[in-house]
Length: 142
Image 1 (cartoon, rainbow, N blue to C red):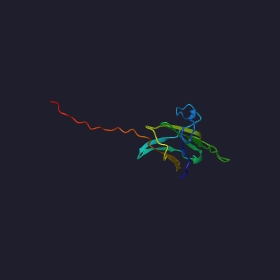
Image 2 (cartoon, one colour; image 1 turned 135 degrees about the vertical axis):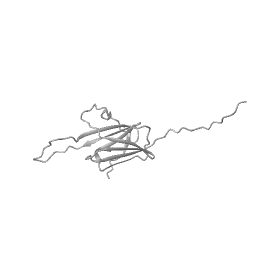
Image 3 (spheres, rainbow, N blue to C red; image 1 turned 60 degrees about the horizontal axis):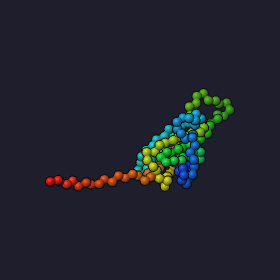
Image 4 (tube, one colour; image 1 turned 30 degrees about the vertical axis):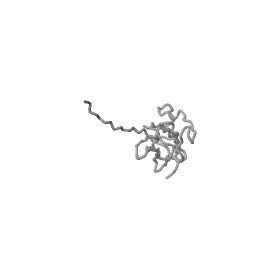
């Protein structure tokens, strides 16, 4: 299980800025988007991203408000002498993914790992909105 580093928070400890390549709207034709799942689990959100063949050192994750941005590079594979591609579907080169989070997350206790080609990022809930239920007393009017 490889650790790829920290999950950075814009304006937080990481102080990274977010580039336009994270827009997720397909503007940059040279950037591919990996498939991803967002799950709500006990205590936070779990993000799972399919990244087979990607080195942990080439992945970066940044949180900006309620957006998670993931980017990195899958190195190109060049066949050895005497071999050539007949059919090619696996995307290579730079990738980027923007994921909207349903609510704020905390900078504390974030965890990220890349194992068996799946990047998993755990983001604990931030300050959750708690709605207090007030019991009303119903009185009889005479």
